[in-house]
Amino acid sequence: MLRNHHRRAAVLGAVCIAAISLGSCETPTPEPAPVVVAAPPPAPLPPLTVAPRVIEQAAAFEAYMNRAAGITPSFTDGPSVARSLTIAAAYEPRQLATGAVAYGAVAALQDPVFVEAVRAYTRNPAQRADIAARIAADPAYITGFPGASSAASLVAQALDREGRRVRVAGESVKQSAYSVQRQAWSKVTIPNREERLANVKALGTALAPADTPTIERLRSLALGQTPSAATPASLRPPYTPVVVRSLAIAALSALGYGDDPAFAPSFDTLLVEPTGGSCLNMSKLNLNQCLAVAKPWYEDVFCLGQHVLIDTGQCMVEAGNAAPPAMAAAVVPVAAPTAAAAAAQARPATPKPGG
Image 1: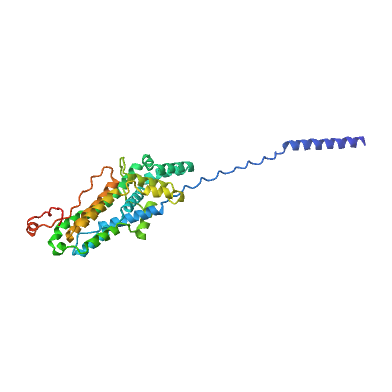
Image 2 (image 1 turned 180 degrees about the vertical axis):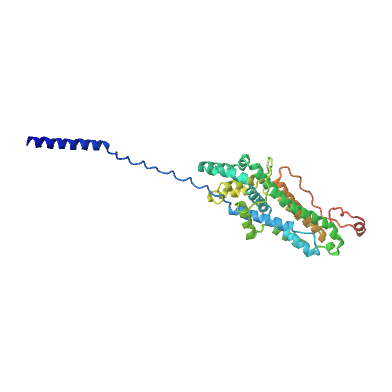
């Protein structure tokens, strides 16, 4: 009995030792892995947007400049002169000046260096809002940004190009005021002169809107959806008020505020250049004075060439350049030379008042 008791004790002891040994060799239960919360992805950058009014005004400007530049001196009778005068006189000065600012903004948005420099500030929402507020308060603030000089060059190039096209057309038309005097119809007194002047003044109350293809083409260029053929250079300041405002509108668009209703008043303000199109107003004043004293048709040709086409084109050239030449003065219709003088002289007759 005693022997069996010792045997059982020995077995139990061995079992206990084995259990302790096995327990000490067990692999510890691993601690649960920490839960890693991924950082939220950065908010997408606001897209470049352009206010519809900017595109519409730019398109109306371009459409008018195309119509004016397309006028040729191929006059065959009085009604052909009247039709060309109707086309050229159909703009309201402040609206055309607003269109020039908008057209410049579209040009500035075609400079990738400028656009990317401005859009760099969209990564920080607070900084983006601050930059936009500064531009709206002081348009000249944008001129210190990288790429501003090259974008300014595109604005100046665009306005200079359009202005020169119209001015060249005007020079050709003005020259024809002399050569057309060889045709008998050009010396006939214009009928209903007062009514014709009233009609021209009425045409100066609005700028016709552009067609949809023109609007969509400029929108595509402004948004970078259509490759631009423009070649930026570098325009040194000081910039004209039109160029500065064009840059400011382009910058707000690049920051993504073009379709923000809160910025609609800012765009409305920036589109109106402070002088209110004074150069264009003077052009229209000179035109009306010229037409008031013009009698034969060739004098209307002179008024059309000088005071609509040349003067209006020169205003656009000046709008883009900091040191513009003076606009041609003068309200002087052309006087008809005598038949002998016309035959003897190859150069045009000398203008003088009256007719």
